[in-house]
Length: 319
Image (tube, rainbow, N blue to C red; front, side, top):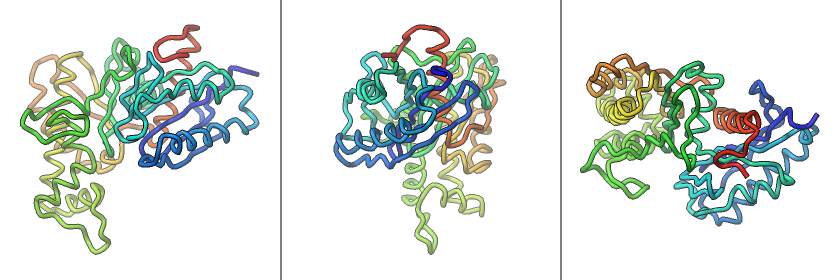
């Protein structure tokens, strides 16, 4: 029966993933391709088309009533376009129009990847049932989305909650977004690894210079690696506290590859949050790891799509 599934797309700098998702959040058919982010716009679009073609070949495709997209941003939900920082060839790229045409005219809704994460965690994860939440992904970049008044709040363009580009150091280094001292420029995985190496940390014999390797060194007590994660935690704490002060959230949920460091990140984050979240109405703010894992983008894009269908309206980002 048509309309008892939605198609979901998760578009990032590393991969483009797709799935058919039922109303309980269960992922059925899946497809995935490398983004080829440093190639031309047509090559990236080709990878997207391959994912859609594979989904359309699934036996259950005819049951899909709409398509939800969670994309690296910035996105422009009103225009249906995206300009991901980590896909240089896509600037004001008409993503919604391409997907709608490729999907046989199905309605399409677009949100930023941070909003998709928030939708997933609020639907089935660590923020389930919460009235106010900030849900973050800390990985190659730092993104986020907000839950306000018990509803995911994408904002007019689909970018609300993008905490990675809150400046926490006015004299800080240049960020990829063009500003300075952004949370992302300090707390992302590449930023952690770069800072550690600048301070004298060196990869082991395997040559692994990633934040994951820095985390392993921190667990072993390497003081430079510990300092790199302490610095990242301080930037995250400042951004989270500023957000909580502004909109009164109850919980900050953190996922992504860097969050996989566990207590190497979460212990200093909780400590630093105590220094920044000082007003009475933010002192009880909880910090929790995300629960949705690598499927968060797909589940969240589907959640946004289901909300569109339930409301019976086209809503922000719908076409």
